[in-house]
Amino acid sequence: MLKLIYNSMKYCDKILWLIIILISSYSLLLVKSISRENFNYFTVQFLSVIIGIICACFLQVLNYKILVKFSKIIGIISVFLILCTLFLGIKIEGSMGVNARAWLALPGGITFQPSELVKIGFIITFSYHVSEIKKNNNFKKFKDIIYLGIHALVPVVLTHLQGDDGAAIIFFCIAFVILFLSGLPIKYFVLLVFLLILVVPVLWKFVLVDYQKKRILTQFNPESDPLNMGYQQIQSMLSIGSGGVLGQGIFNGPRVANNVVPVQESDFIFSVAGEELGFIGCSLILLLILILIFRISYISKISQEITGTYICFGFIGLISMQSIFNLGMCLSLLPVMGVTLPFMSVGGSSVVCLFLGIGIIQNIYINRNQIQKNTNFEL
Image 1 (tube, rainbow, N blue to C red):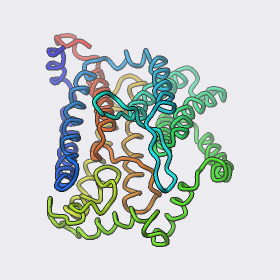
Image 2 (cartoon, one colour):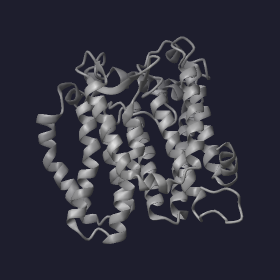
Image 3 (tube, one colour):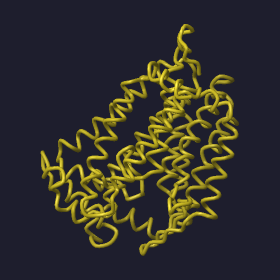
């Protein structure tokens, strides 16, 4: 296996690895600053990155077509994981009405968020589902579109029942991006928008709980509740604004040291970059994420197999949508919804599972031309 991994490094996309290492290193720098006065998040993030790289290296040599072949089993395991979390997970209750079961307790005091792993599994299963329909009838049968909708709704509904609506939204967006980039006729998106407009009043009255409604309403005017619902976003914007162009210097941000922005190590790590590295530091995050998306897009284009292309589309949807929602939260453009910034936020489950996705994409790159027959590296 070690020899396979070594050989795979000759044929993998080294540019993609370089981008990921740069993003992870930047994350570790910011997390090190957060760890000055608080819990040692740096150790957690560093170990997560190392474990993630090891897992990605193993998946890099595993032919992604094997994963696709077992997509039904992956789907069953994914549903099982979410159901286990729903009934056996750790219950998190907040003073504002937050009530979620999104984590499983593992031996050694470790917690794991299954929805992060299920996101990768969903990308595989949904990509395969779309590719089969594309090959067979190119979206000409309406019943197949219905089946795709049901497939997408399964993780959306289950994670909503967990109280993890941030994950539910991301699942929806992954499916949306795959369908859009795969060429689903525009009439179906028009129909989807119409249905969403019709269902919004129902969601507001019967699905959203009080704290979620307050978050949405407060979003229009955070200053209306500055010490409660609007506090996190107000403080985030103040931290970002205090950095100016060049920032106050890494390890020198007083607001970072005093943990003024709640959950700054995770959902609001962008505020740390804003305070300590300023506009330049924030722009660098955006640039690195955009380069990552463009590189994965390039791999999707050179893939010789449609399912591999759609898996890349799914990962583009995951990275881009999580980034948009996270930055929207930090800049008070969107309500707080518990979505992390990919590869940047502290979170073992998120980081390791994102690296799993990178390993799969690397294998898609390696298999783009089935590898030259003269090599000793076989997948």
